[in-house]
Length: 315
Image 1 (tube, rainbow, N blue to C red):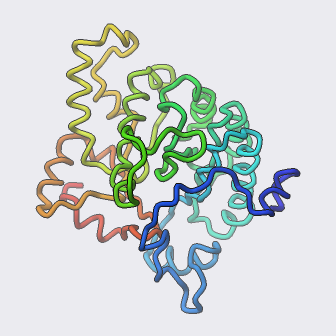
Image 2: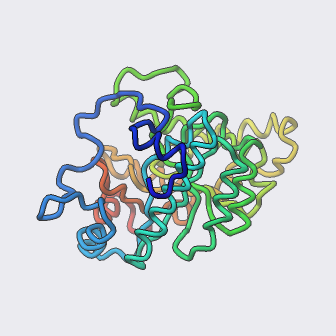
Image 3: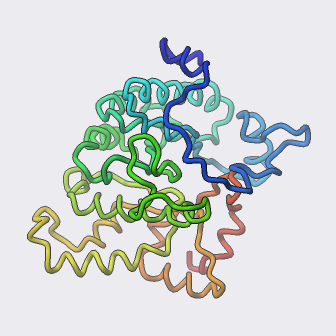
């Protein structure tokens, strides 16, 4: 609240933060029930406890803080969305990053007004612990749409990758959660989140985003991995016969993806036969496209040793 100007301070203090939740029920809750200190405090609730009970406990050299509240960026009220994201950034930059040098930070911006988002990036991008720009994966358009270009231009100017995080599909001004509408349960909704990632990947490549911004890296956090090779096979095949419609795309889409897009391990797919996953990972350059993510303290988060068990020794 202290970083919010009026009238937004009064609004948030009264409990109104914009786009509401879709209301799906997850019996596990959002966060792990054991992510507590011996005193019963929430480990991720303060920089001190996060440093002691997560970073120290797991011998973590550094980790990227991805704050909640991304859905605010999908508010139809662009000034409120920008102000809220700015306040969120100030909390972490001023109250968290100085506590532990192992912390890195994802700068949250709202896509409701790309010009305001670009201003927020320019304001904080030179902080040494700010390492990427973070957007909601729920969106009005595919992220290749030129509407978003001011965000990419600002990110590239500071050599920051742009990342998306799932969970906001269907909220605020975003489209429906899936191509078929509204899922009937949290289970269905959660299982289908990779769908929006596929859509954004196709949009970014087909609409020439990386031709205009050759220095841009795009991070798809927590969107899964195993869907990538089959969609690239389809993408490359269609490009051969339809490339006239995208004259700026002068090489196979898969090559563009390999150079500009990275994925994260959480939630790694877990087939009953682990060799099947390893075969999938051999179908694209996972050695340069796959990054570790923990998703702590969420209910389905992974520890490093768990993720490594799923990967071939070569990775």
